[in-house]
Amino acid sequence: MPSGRRVHGARKLRLFPLLAATYFMVSGGPYDIEDIIGFGGYGRALLLIFFLPFFWSFPTALMLGELASAVPAEGGFYAWVRRALGPFWGFQEAWLSLASSVFDMAIYPTTFVLYLERLAPALTTGHRALLLELAVIAAAVIWNLRGAAAVGEGSLKLWAISISPYVVLVGIAAYIGFLGNQGPFGGHASMAHPADAAFSTAVLVAMWNYMGWDNATTVANEVENPQRNYPRVVLLAVLMIMITYAIPIAAVAWAGIPSDRFSTGAWVDAARTLGGPALAIAVVLAGVIDDFGTFSNLTMSYTRLPHALAQDGLLPAVFTKKLKNGSPWVSVLACGLCWALALGFTFERLITIDIALWGLSLMLEFLALVILRRKEPSLPRPFRIPGPDWVPILLGIGPAALIVYALYVSRTETVAGISAFTFALIIALLGVPLYLFAKFSNRRRPRRQNTDDESGTSS
Image (cartoon, rainbow, N blue to C red; front, top):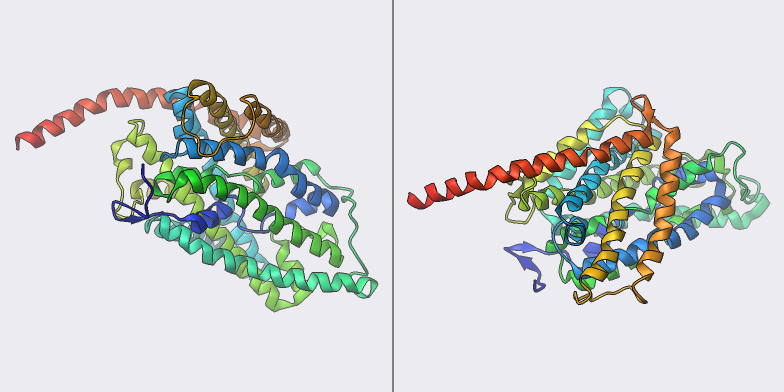
C-alpha cells in the first residue's frame, strides 16, 4: 500500500511519534526498574541493563524489523504468524498477546498508585486506589478514541515531561558522588548485591522492562512508510532505553544511596533525599505521566488485534467498526473493560504471568520469521537480517532460553492456589477451544451477511 500521511481522512504516525509510542510501549523511562536494583544490587542491575538487550532485545528488534518491513499489515505479529503458519496459529498468537495484555495492562494503573502513594498516602488508601486505577483506564480509552496519530504525537510531549526530573536527579547525584566521603551517604554505594536479594526477581523485572517491541507493529496501517520506519524505530528505541535505564542507576550508585532502599516507587525517595521535596514531587508527577503514557500507547496497540481478528471472521463483525480517525472504538471500549477487571494482582505476580504468556507469543514470531524465509524467499524485505537463513534461528536462541528461565522461575509464584506457570499454561491452552468456537461461529456468519445484503439490495 503506498505510504502517505492520511488514510480515509485519518492522520498517520510519522517517524518520531512512532518512536515515542514504541518507547512508551516498552519502557517510558527509568520508572518501574527499582526492583532490579533492590533485588539484584547495583552491580548486577547494571550488568542486566547492559547485557540483557544483546540476548533479549536486539534479536527481537532484528526479527521485528524484517517482518514489519516485509508484512506491514494491520494486526502486526498476528498477520505475520497467520501468513507463515496458518489461521490456527495466527489466532493463538493473537490470543496469547491479548491474554498477556490483561495482566500487563493491570501493571501500569498499579504502579501509578504506588508512585502517588509515596507522595500522598491519603489519596491511595482503601477504595481510592481502585478509583484512581479505573480513572487511568478511562482516560487512556478516551484518548485512544481520538486515533493513533493523536496518541503518538502526544507521547512526544509526555516523554519530554516524564524524563525531565531525571536530568535534574542525575545531575545532583553526580555532584554528590564527586564529593566522595563528604557526601550525605559517605561515598559511593557498594556494587555487591544485597544478602537477601532474589536475583531471579531482578532478572524477571529486567526482562519485563525490555519487552513489548512488537506492540507498535499492530498499527501498521496507521503508520507512514512502515517498511522504512519500523526497523529504524525499533533499533533506535533499544539504544534509547538502555541509556535511560543505565544512567540513573549509575548516578544513584555513584551518590552512595544503598541499593536495599529500592523497591517500586523508590525513585521518589531518592529524589527527596537528593533534591528535597520539590524534586520528589516532580518525580511523582512524571511517574504518573509515564504510567499513563505507557498504558495509553499499549491501548493503541492491543486494541488493533480484536479488529484484525474480526476482519478475518474470528470475532463478531461489530469489532470491525472504526471512527473516522481510524480508532477501532468497539475494540477500545471492550479491551478497557477487560483490563479494568484484572486490577488487584501484586506487581511481581503480574510480571510473572505477563512474561510467560508474551514469551510464548514471541516464540511464534521467531518461528514465523524462519518459515517465511523458506516459504516466501522472494517476498520483498526492505530490511533483511544480514547473513544466511540460519541466522534467524541463532537469533531466537537467546530469547528462547530467557523465556524458559522465566517459565521455570514462575513455578514459585502462586495464583488462585496454583503456580503462575500452570495458571499461564491453562490460559494459553484456552486458545484452542476459543479458536474452534470462532471457526464454528464464522461458518454461520456469512449466511446471515448474505441475507442482509440481499434484503438490502431488494429494497
